[in-house]
Image (cartoon, rainbow, N blue to C red; front, side, top):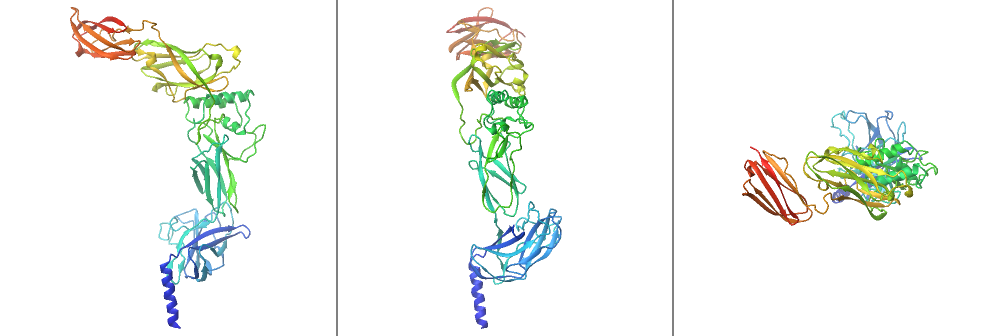
Length: 573
């Protein structure tokens, strides 16, 4: 009989050593009994698993809960008792630790099925507080500084193999999922789904998915605060103004939230002013608002005034008994026309028109101050525009418009040669509008010689280039420079400076591509130097220094296919 028992032990020992013997644990809250339940789940069948004495499952409670021994009731594998407690140790002052240990007994485990080991109650139950199982690879061990030698971990020994079968804790909760889309139906990614104990970043086509514990309450709050300019333009300003004046009121509730730039609960001119300053680049973000706001899709807005009552930006999730789907509508602040680009091509009405801004091209010499005026020949079909200008070799001194004010200009990057403007009509009665109008003027000072057309250009930063016709369709914008030189546009300019000691520049303008020959002669007519090159249409120049010429009076002549011109210069000692 003794030999038979030894043989069974050996067979059992060999069986357990040749197979993985993993036991996973979970904690679940039972709403009916107000008890917490601890379960074990094995990855193979153990018809006779002998729970070794000294096996322990540790529980972590918030330190706010009353300090007292847990009331444990054994179901299987016990008896289980709260053998040791450690309250708010230095290693984790927000935690209380309880070691629930077993004296050992035989249980039957079936692969993949949960087995209830014991239950316990706590002195006071706060459903919003986290009560959880100890994590062996995260929580401080007994030898950790500040644990006061407390022996807390998860250890589930098989008395037959003398091995610890514990592997990990697993989630027993339910799945919370949903979609995040704009009111126009486009998916929004990279949204933080945040809670006290949980933050998930959705990054898959506007959907999110979270495994949550059934014994906790969650307050789900989506947030996203990047790329504030995405989807914003002067057309949004126009539409907000039309809503305020009751010309074209918003017909979608989310438009009201998007238009409430300053988060005041109302829509006013103050919202338009702040939105325009962001578009112009004068501010980098909204002062009182985030770039995005999120509302539970099922929320019922007040039909006459959607901002009247608080809407659901945070959704409270109590103990879940089943999987739950909660969808959110993403609202891009300022974007009342729904043009934000998120995982879908932007859909924009286009008039296939171009707004021409006419201005005179002039040749500027270093030190010259000049005021250029931007004029349109189609003012009665212009609802609004926005653009940025980049200057090179020029300093912008002032900007002015009889149609608007300083709030219509962005000058925060003026030192970098960038200015921006945003403007919209306040009178949309075409028959009362002139065809030709001066939109704005810019006073500049030249830092070098050259044509205005070569030193001033449109640029997409900080404000995108676009205009809108009276139907609200988007138009391109282009600068149209008129030549100040007429048909005889070829010209050789006087060198600057003249006379010169160290350096000088000779400039010339070609109405088209041409081979040029620049000849220098002294007072006696002797050729000092000849330069022959192919040059492109437009302003061209040559730079010279004192080593290129001897002291005295020098005559220079430029020959092109458009004619010849000559001038003279003086080289000083």
